[in-house]
Image 1 (tube, each protein chain N blue to C red):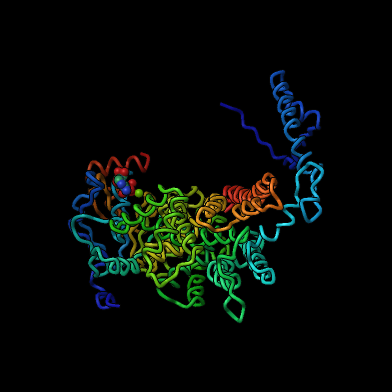
Image 2 (cartoon, chains in turn cyan, red):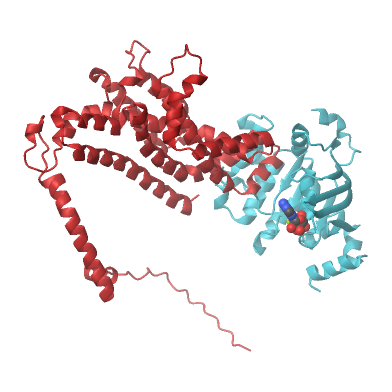
Length: 254
Length: 367
Ligand SMILES: Nc1ncnc2c1ncn2[C@@H]1O[C@H](COP(=O)(O)OP(=O)(O)O)[C@@H](O)[C@H]1O
Ligand SMILES: [Mg+2]
């Protein structure tokens, strides 16, 4: 593990400098500079289509950027497949639509990557999976298939699946926006606990209550740019930019 | 302001009312709804009776079933004696009679494997798949061909009939599947060379009729292998059929791959899985399930197409029946021969078609 050496605690978890990305001619990310320290919790918000998903998907190279650099846990991102996979080992991701593997049981969903990527023995991987399924309070469903669970339960399994890889940072892309209202809280509760345990987190979400209680910083994006970045208290009470004010008034409904 | 209503008495669940349709009501609703429908229904019924009566008369009522030679056929109907007298040859070709148990055993093993794979109730599908794809072909080869444990060798030019048809179709489909998967993955590849090779390969074979492929396989393949290797005629046909079939299989696989949401591969990638693990553990297992109806349909098409091998001198079911028609003892019974061939093909294809429809329904509703 060459990465261990680069893991000194003062290196930032994520560094993005001068990041630019285009889809064809469409300039989707513009001059993004963002540094995330270890243990920091960041919430990203902004109107639909502003590039929030694209931004966090660049961090584990689900999207490729064309300009600028990204360093994750001290490892600079390159085109090299091995390098990308190495970075992905340290980065967990939770998707809006859960993306659980429907042909595998909940337990298999969680133990698959530890077995095949980290080469853990099956027994050990399953114990690990059970440990995290208990943490997200869904251990009793371990032998069901994802299709038999509610949305909130599926999203909690997805979080456990990510945690089984012992990530150093977790990326959340609107983890509650595909859920029925009564299920949002069970997922947010798990995320809050995760934050309290000191996990480095980058969450794209419009759950402003979550942002206020958990975030160290809130970032507002619009049209591919970071417009405003502040601690939650001043961000919500005293937004500087007009676009932020407009967005907040729309989302908070007053 | 609307008035508040509050209802706290629970309503017990009741069974849904039964819809009762008697035979008369059914006839009226489906066949005799209005004058035009009635006329059309009567016409259709008349046509069915007019067409089927002589057929049934010929094939069943007037037919001769028992006997050993053409003397037994005197009643003017179909002479099924011809089929029963030659039946063994139609099934086994020129396979030595005392060794035919080996063919039977192979067929039985195959039927057991297929039942194991196809019947949802039976457990350990993965083991069954591995056995069918990896172990069964080897066992089947040594059973049919011999040469192991002192079993006499039966050269492939003695194989024939239904047995050969099944060998061609099954080997064709089983060998084409992995090649088809590789081609379909290649076609999606981001590497331009891999992609273009796959596309050219697929489009080439899809654009050539099977009959041409078989001619090419029997004439051209020997040009590519060293002369000291005497390539078996059956092997040549199998190579041709497999390459041809793999192009179609690739398109079936591609359809299956496209049906899997992109999020699946992304989730696997985010967990640090490399390409082959993403494909092998996440995408293909899901895609294969959706591909089964397509694979079965391709198999039906191939099963019927195998009879083209008669043009390169292999005696499949159709060819061997045709050869028997030329026998001076049985001249004049070609209708019986062709009806028999059609019937055997139909039984197999109909069975597979029903199975694939059942699967489609199941995939549609379940997981
Ligand atoms: N694969 C793609 N190809 C082309 N345009 C895309 C693609 N993905 C996203 N976009 C566009 O990029 C913009 C930003 O998308 P996204 O990052 O998903 O926004 P957000 O998550 O903030 O809603 C949107 O306008 C979207 O239409
Ligand atoms: Mg988004």
